[in-house]
Amino acid sequence: MEVLWVVLAIVVVLAIAGVVSYNRFVSQKNLIKDAWANIDTELRRRYDLIPNIVETVKGYAAHEREVFENVTRARANATGATGSPAEQAAAEGPLVAALRQLFAVVENYPDLKANQNFLALQAELTNTEDRLQTARRFYNANVRDYNRRVQSVPSNVVANLFHFEEEEFFEVEEALRGDEGVPKVSFEAGAPGVSFGSPSEPSTAPPATPPAHRLVLS
Image (tube, rainbow, N blue to C red):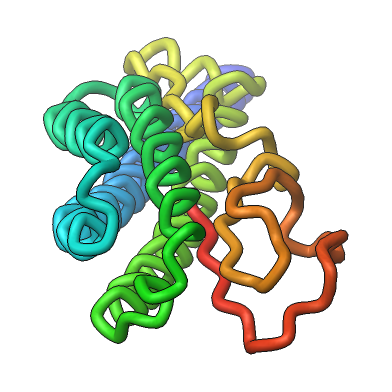
C-alpha cells in the first residue's frame, strides 16, 4: 500500500509539473506573438515614412531615378512580405540597402540636408529605427528563452508531446552583422555618407564643425 501511495504521489507531482511547464510554454508563445506585433508596428511606421522621404529627395535630385526605383521596389517587397520572421528579414535586407543608397545621395545636396521637412522626416525615421531595434531585441530575447526550454530537459518532453517547436529569430542578414554591421548614414562634415561599424566606436572622420545629424538604419 505504501508503494502505491508513493507511485501515486510521483504521478501527481509529474502531472502538476507537466501542467506548469505547458502553461509556461503557452505564456512564452504569447509573449513572442506580442513582441512580433511590436516589430510589425515599427516596420509599418517605417514603410509609411519612406514615400515622404523619397518625394522630398526627388525635389532636389530628380535625376537619381534608379535610386528612387530601388527604394520603391524594395519597400513594396518588404510591405508585401507576410511570411515567417526569417522571410520578413530577407525582404528587409534589400530595403535597408536601398535606403543606404538613398541617403548616400542626400550627402551630395547641402540644401536638402538643411531642408526642414527633410530634417523632420529624418528625425522621425531615426526614432522609428530606435524603437524597431528595441522591439527586435525584446522579440529575440523571448525567442531565445523559449527555444532554450524547447531544447532542454525535462521541458523538451512537454514540448515534444504538445508540438511546441522552435521559433525563428528576426535578423536582417544583409544589413546587420551583429553590433558592427549597423549601417550608419552620417551628415557630419567630412564624414563618409555610409559606413559600417559599431555605433559606440569612435569616428575616424575629421571633427565636424556644424552639429552632426546621425541616422542609424536597422
